[in-house]
Structures are given as structure tokens and as C-alpha cells.
Length: 234
Image 1 (cartoon, rainbow, N blue to C red):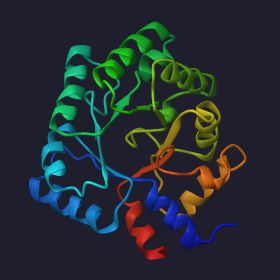
Image 2 (cartoon, rainbow, N blue to C red; image 1 turned 90 degrees about the vertical axis):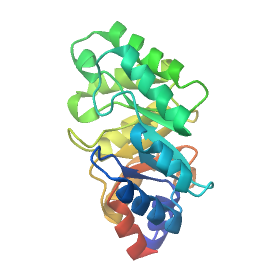
Image 3 (spheres, helix red, strand yellow; image 1 turned 120 degrees about the horizontal axis):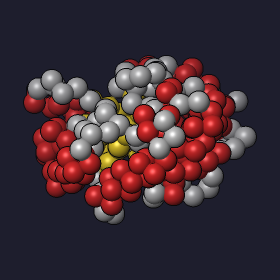
Image 4 (cartoon, one colour; image 1 turned 30 degrees about the horizontal axis):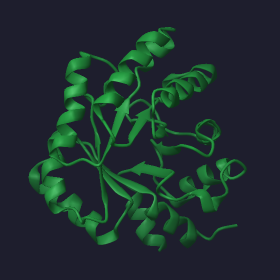
């Protein structure tokens, strides 16, 4: 069994350190990036409006992700959503996080889910896209189908949640890991705040993904407050 310090090291190496507050000021973003540069997570994740300032300050060894496509909404004018993705990339984002249309998913409108997701991923070009399934809104069958659609559309990572409508669970972690198999990544987000939370989720997927597979190219944890707990255990 991995020690708390080992779990903390994995969590930091795979952390998408997050600031997704529309009202964050430039000073807030600067303080956030300064902290990221101090501890070197895998990536930071910000809104498109904050990408430029984050890019100007962020250490080049840390990836810059942006929650785009009118995050945290799952729908809306697809032209506006794709333009938001393109804007984030033009400002300097390396990766894109977008929300799958879970309302259409729940209503059985699979064609609409595919159409919007295909457009968003196409807008991202060569940038890796993490597709947020918002699993707390889906039943088990819908979650399985959402994973399949996301992967069919070209998702690089399956991501559990925006954190706005509920969080990740060990069962969700297992479903995402099984769906991603050995070709794609997963990002666990929503309510993961402690080292014990990280351990519980890693243990849930351990039969599918041995702990040595939890590397930042395939495994991420999205969180804003987890860094405090990580630092305490390093």
C-alpha cells in the first residue's frame, strides 16, 4: 500500500490545479500562477479570459489548460462555443476542457451530443481535449454511453465533472478507467480535496490501472483546494 507521501507525490504530478472564477482579478490569477510555479503541478486550468495572463507568467514546464466552450454550460450556440475554444487556444492554452451536452444525453438525443462534441473537438485542432461528462447528472447506462460518444468523437481524456453539479465517486473513476482502456486518459474532478480522497479513487481503479500507470499523460486530478493537502504530505 502506497504511503501518504507517495499518494501526495502522484497527486501533485497529475494535478490540474484549477481557478475557474469569472470574477477573479488579475491579481488573483497572478497569485494562483505564482503558487503553481512554486509547486509544479502537471497543469493549471483557467477560463479563456484568464489564459493570456496565465500564459505570460506560467513556468513553461507546466501545461496550461482552459475550460472553454462556454464552461460550465453543456449547450448553447455552437458557434459561440467553438469560438470560445478557438479564443482560448489563440491566447496560449495547451489543452481544452469542454462539457458534453449531458441534457441531450439524458433526453436520448445522441445525435445532438455527437454533433456538438465533434464541433468542439474539431475547433481544438491538435490540442488535447478533456470531455467533461458531468457524471453526477447521468445514470449508469448514460454514463457508459457518454464515454463511448466522447471517445468516438476524439476525446483525449474522459473527465468526470465540472464540480458545479456534484462530484466524482470511486464508481465513476472505475467506469472512466474501464472506458479509457490503454489508449486514452481520465481526469477525476469534483469533491477531491484530501489525500484520502485521492487514495480512495486510485484504489478504485487499481485493478484496471496499476498505480504506475497514473502518470500525467494519462491521469489527471482536477482540483482547486487539493494542493494544500498535497503540500502537507510531501
